[in-house]
Amino acid sequence: MVRTIDWYYRRNNCTSCAKADALLDEKGLKARSVVDARKEKLGKPQIASILRGTTLVVASKGKTTVDFDLKRDPPVEKVLYEHLIGPTGGLRAPAMRLGKTLVVGFHEERWKQLLA
Image (cartoon, rainbow, N blue to C red; front, top):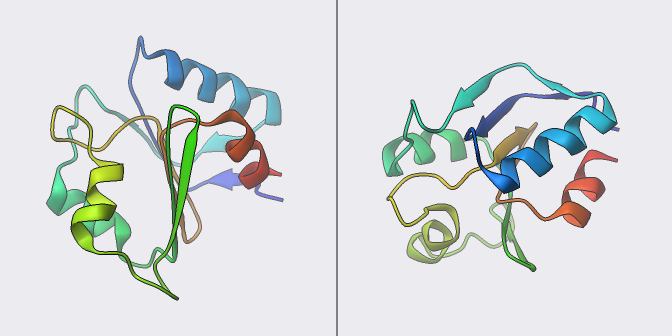
């Protein structure tokens, strides 16, 4: 079971972020580091830094979730970034780092699986 979240990237007044916050509260989880997406936009260089040491990326958009196993079958960089970067050119929120897993976008069932 996950007890702490290493890093959490969220935006105020974001519906998906509010749902993610509620789920984290329900599970009694706190993040070691919380970053406000409106104050700190993370572009490709920062995302590349976050990806170092990551073995799994879980990217959700709407009802679709895609897993990228970076250790076994690294995806083409362009394809990976298409799932991670939003329309403003920054990392999509909410996002969290759980050990060697980076989770981007909110999909309630997938988050529950990862946080169980």
